[in-house]
Length: 191
Image (cartoon, rainbow, N blue to C red; front, side, top):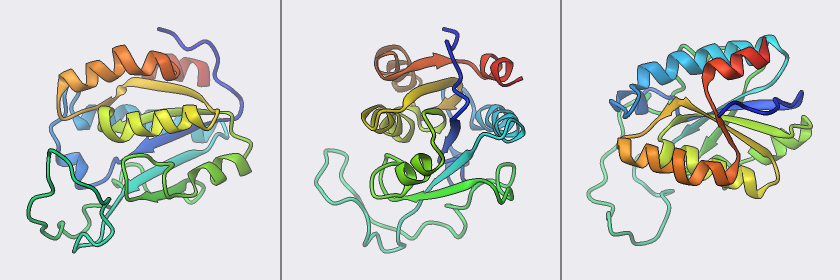
């Protein structure tokens, strides 16, 4: 579905495009495809004077700051992540005007200053890309909706570890939270 409006005060929020997560193959899109589309969007947002927010997830090597609570998935044995796994990919990093948010949960809003950063800039709309669709992106979209932002989801600039999970988010959840669109449609509106 085409996007109805791109607000003049829109921000691109990129979820978890970092070295460790880029190793995930991705479904239905590869993480390389998601990165390429997100880089195009980030360049266009920057060129239009709109902010780009780069969200990264991290945790202490010993898991001391991991989200508590029991899950059916369990936590399993904890091993230290590889060095640099939580570093934003080079293709997106290096722009001093970008905002970087570090999270320790699925949502980029919970326990971070993302809402404060957006409100200080008068942002009314967030455009989301990233990995994984049904986890970090969906959690961030839900929180953005709850915070009163217009939510736009570039569904071809996000992917999941499971194609069915991606489709469920795109087809059943996202239409209730905002508008879904494509990278090309967003680029036309930014042009």
